[in-house]
Length: 390
Image 1 (cartoon, one colour):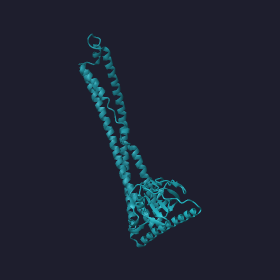
Image 2 (cartoon, helix red, strand yellow):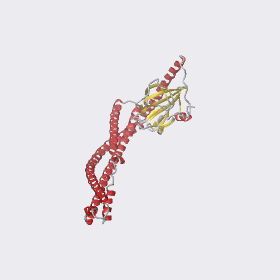
Image 3 (cartoon, one colour):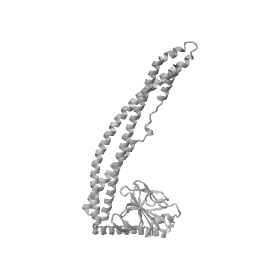
Image 4 (tube, helix red, strand yellow):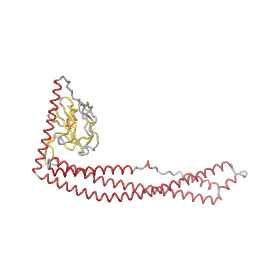
């Protein structure tokens, strides 16, 4: 009888040590869903603002190049928004699966605990209950009475732990059931919302693609856009020429000339793919070959944009065709231009070190324009970076 009774006791001990997986051991879907929904809201707000701006551009009949760039950006952001809708639905689905798995784990623990308790009741019935074991301690030659009391206290502690664990699991089950119902309702609501949003923005994207195609096929609009590209290049050259003149005047007033820092530790302004190279390149928006004076590097909006090499901030201004930018005097007649920036962190006159943050990639562009000039002459930025300024 004794081995049977003790095996029931120690069987309890093993069974009640089943520890539920904590929430910290699983992916925090609530936080991830909230983050993705914030991104969706930001993307939708940007799309709506872009669409209003496009309508204003059409009414005012402003430059073809500006309209083309806005339409292309709107199409790209629409695709990002539709892709984000799909990703958010997938995350909601995964979170629903995680809640169902939690429910299953709780049910398994409850069933396991019930099976252990049933086994114990059956064992105690067969042995006649623990009281007989305790009473045997009063009889001579039947073992240590205090040891039996010790074992009985352990059994009582296990009983208490079983009851407490059962109450905790019951509460967990109620909360999990409520969360499951809420997550199912949230997913159903999101699917209905996604369906409407996809219909709306797919229609808007097709309209923008149609308008883009019309402009691209119109030779007059294309020539206007090409002229604007040339005009932008001329304006940048004028800016650099003015800065070069200012630098020479300062040198004439006995200001010491700065020297370009040369070496291999030059920084690519932002880590990403070079989507537009220097020189004669095919312009995907204009559907023709144009001359690029710099390079464009794809970057995630908000990513830091760094100084390629040390120098002094010569000017912070709007770069024609490329939004807000920073022009740096790097010494030895070298100027570097960084455009499509947001959150600019430097000021005119600041001394900047190699790889120091200048600002971030703008949300509107999603890429950084980088140009290198020796005086007013343009250099290939990619080759210049690799050579370390040589």
